[in-house]
Length: 130
Image (cartoon, rainbow, N blue to C red; front, side):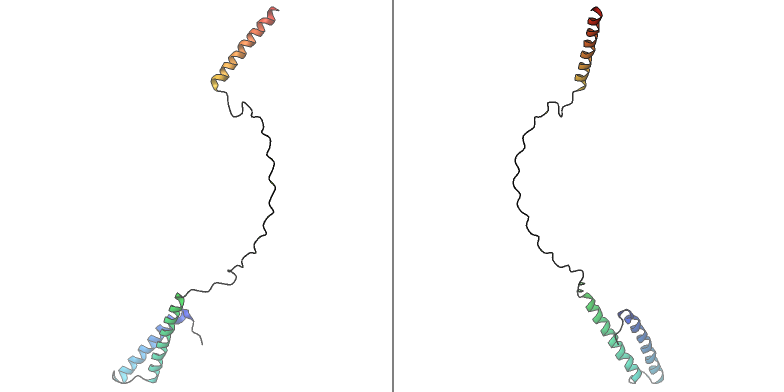
């Protein structure tokens, strides 16, 4: 029966407690120089097996894990090359506007406004005389 890796530490602790109890009973009843009983020997063997399984799992955990099959995507097939386009005819150049991108300055605006006022005054005087 496989041993769950999550329960190994608790199993080792429980085994150690039972082994300690068995050893204490043997020492108390028969003395320290007596050989271990069958029950105590079975507990020692089980403890050795659990420790080996624990080290085996720890070594196995350091190895790289295999990747899931659904993560490995198959390569896409190469696309067919597109047909070469014909070069376009060059467009005719448009005439550039003279005022495009150039704003009149504030001084130019005021000067033009003053000229327009003068022209309006002169025009009003001429029409009144006529």
